Amino acid sequence: MKRRPQTARKEKRSTRNRAKVDSNGQRDRGSSIHGLRHPKTELESAIQRYVDLYDFAPIAYVSFDRAGRVEEANLAATELLSEPRDLLIGRPFAFYVANLDSLLQHLLYCRTSQQQVQTELLLRSRKGEQIPALLLSTPITSTARNGALLYQTAIIDLRERKTHERVLTEQARLLDLSNDAIIVRDAEDRVTYWNQGAEKIYGYTREEALGKVIYDLLKTEHPEARSKIYQKLLRDNRWEGELVHSRRDGKRLTMFS
Image (tube, rainbow, N blue to C red):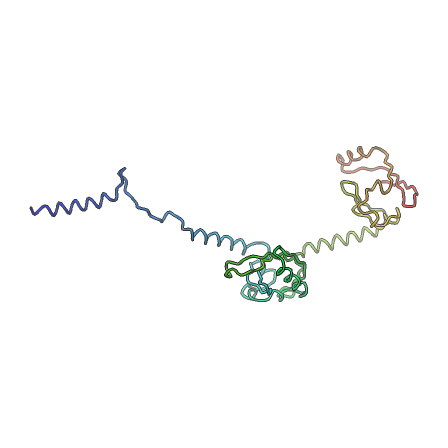
């Protein structure tokens, strides 16, 4: 009679052990959530990826409010403007603009448009360097600013493009100094460049020649069919021969091309 309580205790322990074994004889690990990803964790990860993409983008980005005060800035913007982020954020963007009227007009267009606004202006870095730039501003709702309306702005550095434009302008100026007729045409034989030498030789101004089909303008007489000339151009990347052109006054000229 005294052994029965012990048997009951053994059965109780056995019952607890059986609760951990399933019908296949495998232990039941329960419904642990350790293997599941919490939705909040996924959202935070997605936000962090966006922040990283924004912060380490090669293009400078700032976000400013309706008054033009900087609320956000990535690393490229701090480098372009030579200003630490803690000093850049909270400061009026006008502090970095050489021409204030251009920025005020840009802000006005931002406030009155729901689309992207583009403005080319001259920036001034903290070091005093002037930087030609293009602002591309798009209205966004900032989750980090309690739904405030901001204008996320890409700042495109135009210094390299401006340098290329100056080089091309100088090259065009040098071509204009030539006494020879220098004519450039596109794939449809329309004039895209007409220098001063061509004006003197043919009597047509640049404005009159640009966009015209060259052989119609000069009433060109070819030594062979144009189709054959084009075939040689495609094959050899060049063609040489004599062409007969007509000046504006009707005089015929034999030219070597």
